[in-house]
Image 1: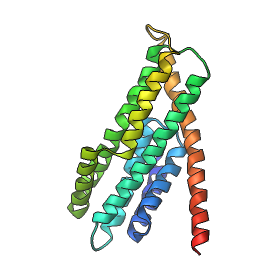
Image 2: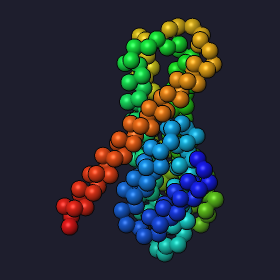
Image 3: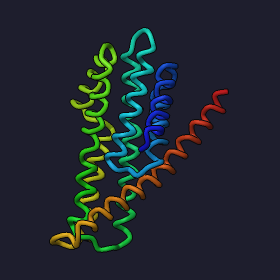
Length: 219
């Protein structure tokens, strides 16, 4: 992700946080849009989470008053977006397995192992960014992240279900033994993340249309 893209995401997130209205939905939607424009690799997901969190921290720093609700809403919006990314990955995995291709066990392992990391890396990324922000932002986000780690996140629950289903579905499809090659595993991970990105783009469009419809009814 280019520096220009990162700055654009940060500026959009900062503006949303500063205005303080519908922060959860705004954070979710901007994160989904950013994620759907690139492959859903762990590195790309975390780059987007980091950029959005940095922007939110900047925007909240310009506001006066209580930040507890804002921290809660921002983290919830990020969680919703990461959950949708996990759901898209789950659907992508189902599509790949249903194609009937015979995979090697080790071809699939890197993709599953990457997915397992997402929830903790998501929370760790938010924690690191907001700790650097310091002050009330650090305090409020630390409390929200502590609660999320104790009770789990929506994205974490989807990820756990996805990993379990992925392992079950491929059990009858994969070959036993070593992978055919290191490139086979890399190819599988790349195919999965690119397919998931396309699915997520569709999800993002549906949510955007629902939001627009809701706005029209509210008028």
